[in-house]
Image (cartoon, rainbow, N blue to C red; front, side, top):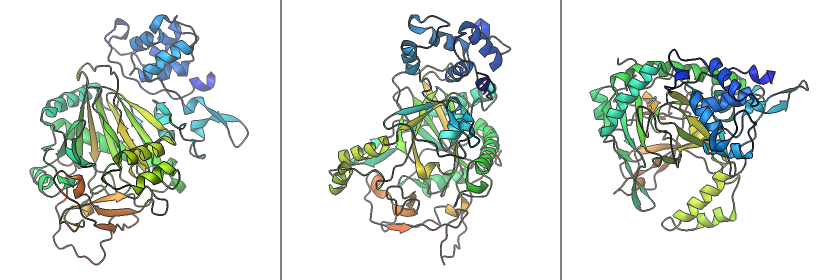
Length: 476
């Protein structure tokens, strides 16, 4: 028990207006003291994790632990565990798992995580994580809860909820069908000139952007804090996690500077986005992305990319032998089979949380926002979640420099992920076939980068120097 109490306690927010949570807001220790008095047989760290999962609300924790006639103060039995699970209770915590250390003593798993390769989630299972320590241990992400002062977070949420009236759904081609994204979005840049570029030069998913907007005052203001926090976490990860305390190959050594943002709106529990890796075309290899969540809490799920060679089944091979026009179901089944081989991890993203996706995320993992059966409405946004993904578009990857395919369209940059012999290599390829009303060609070219992730264009001389995107912070 003493080992558990010594764990650093994360700050937790509280939007409840209950009398016992009135202003000034109690700190985490006070809330834990209240809960320990109500549930004396439940371990302190278990109560802390439940408090975090309930977004700091003592009232919600009491309601959760007292649900379905459970007796307050009794240990969590099977019946109560089932109730807790329906609310997204954490299924495993590295701080609760002890492993043998080199000196023979037993230490929490998180203390030895940097020296040992962690086992993946069980096959076909979902591992739910809430605490920053566990998220940093099991995934290539870090999370900062209560990132902004409450008033600033709420002001940004209100501003972007108003902006979301102008958001739209993007269309793309999927197995001979034109489909729409299951959520709305817009792209934000700093200046009118950048707005022109985004609608006439930059492409995304094989099409030009049409829904581009200029950064709002609050979006600009918050970006300075995002930039500072992301750079701090990048340096920590390089120092504490990466081999020999060095950046990854192709990762930029320069300061991360957000100059574009994708703002997404998920209106209701069914709006979601499937498993994917973010496009690398303008952010380059091993990019870092800062993702700020506002409004309704949702599940952010991640899973490792399993190479086909590592876990190929007869079903995989049969699916690959069929023609492109008839194998959509087979390929989807094969992909799901590979995905389930290591399970998935669910990260709880409450209001006002900043998630940093580190340099290995896009090449080695896929991520999604899972649809939910039910969600707890937010006091300001109701059933809506606003998500801002801040990105750094690199000057050396302006669309005036990147290759064009045979059909005259802009190519996109992708990382090979399916076969071991080419895994980790980057390639320029035609993506026009995924844009509605267009046909792609067979263009393919391996991409070459220097150690800092800048493209090696060979003997090509760039005479027309492309304009750079302005850092949000610098444009204030």
